[in-house]
Length: 89
Image 1 (cartoon, rainbow, N blue to C red):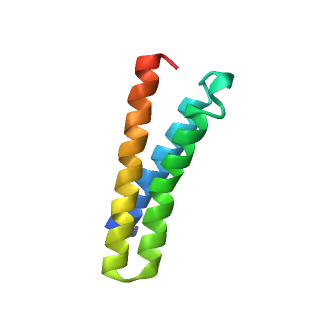
Image 2: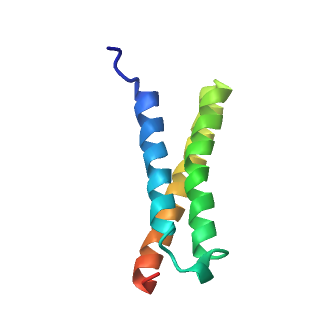
Image 3: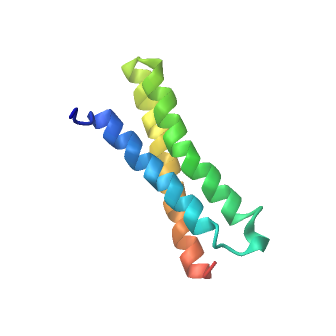
C-alpha cells in the first residue's frame, strides 16, 4: 500500500475541514444564510482552493504566495467560528 505524500495528507486535511464547516453551518439559523454562513463557507473553500492553485502553478515563489493567502483564509475562518460561538449562532 502506497503511503500518502505530505501534499496528499495536507489536501485531505483541508478537505475534511471544509466538509466539517459545511456540516456545522447547516445547523446555523436560516437568517444567517447570507451572512455568517455564506462567509465562512466561502472562506473555508478558499483555503483549499488557494492551496491547490498554488501547488498546480509549480513555481515555489508563486506556491508560497498562495500558501500565505490560504493561511489568511484559514485565520479568517477561525475568527468567524469564534464569533459564531460567542454570538451563539
